[in-house]
Length: 242
Image 1 (tube, helix red, strand yellow):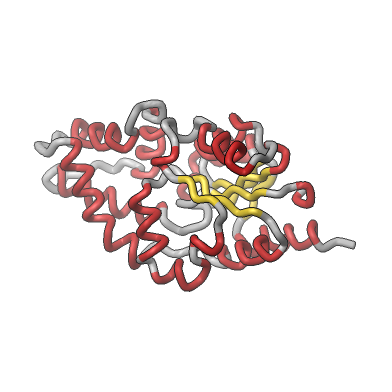
Image 2 (cartoon, rainbow, N blue to C red):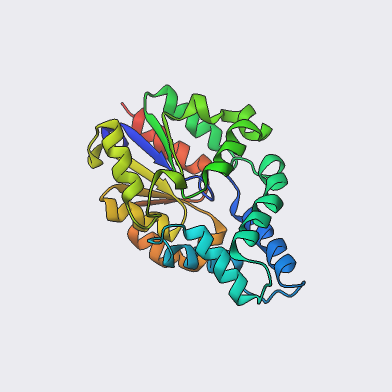
């Protein structure tokens, strides 16, 4: 039950913020640039997720992902050059287009007011997190990261990405809490798998870009919600019942 929890751990991309489609647009533009305008009919989100999962134990999963793109699209650019270009393309998107999912900020404010410790555990890189924290006016005006979250762990905080549970173990140690004290809110299969691997209860916020894994996600999670309005109502019913 939510009443028994102390810490709520949120994933970021696809869970709190509506960014998966943005990253798909970024990667689509990137692939066109590195492959001389050629792009296949691949599901970009599925391809990216599967490759990051495959490379999760490597020293730098995103570098390996860019190496994969180089090889698949026969690019003359190096993996390092492709990664640099990806950051350049992403810059404007991250500052101006990314926003919280509808009413996500309301649930953050509600949980904060109820005394929960709020944490971000994301595979997003540190540079992107800084963009959200300091340059994205939509996020800053609704619920800025620094006032809302007690801990923000991103890609640079761990050696192994989700579905490895390293990031969650680090949170447990830092806050000196037990896994039973925590709840994780995720959207993707690799995120849900990371929660399961850590032995922590996980709820799912719907994101259409994870539909291809919906059956597995639902099987591995305790509760599933279509939007933050539904989740907030559920939380209020549980926390405020007499």
